[in-house]
Length: 149
Image (cartoon, rainbow, N blue to C red; front, side, top):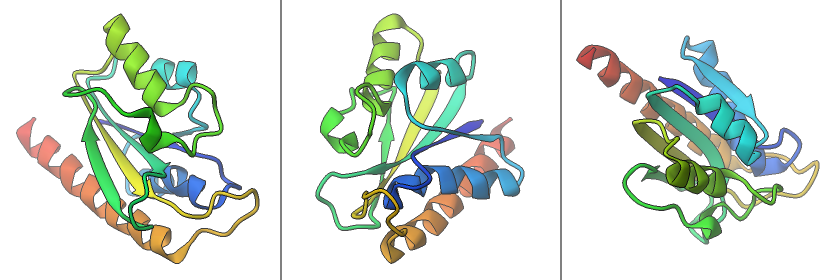
């Protein structure tokens, strides 16, 4: 399993995915951090069979909400990832990979709803708590995958 944390380190809640990846890497999981540009994401998951992507979202849900998408089962709505600073971000990378037949066999996206995205903003308390919860859930998922192998 590869975990890809997406975000910007100085963008307030936009750092959520990066922080998830850092904490998981510290716990021994394969985890990398990327800014969320489509080509870089597709390159990172090339050849991987099982990928979890963690990113901040802005859907209108309460801050700190965690939503999990199965990227292989249905198209992603770009609106859920509108906090991206890139013209082509997570949703576009997934959909382009789908069209090109380059999605991993299994891909889940853990979206953490943010509320502070201004440059230099602090991480909101709701997102900080959600990061801990997302890490816990991903560790459980990794443990289940290890038991299956």
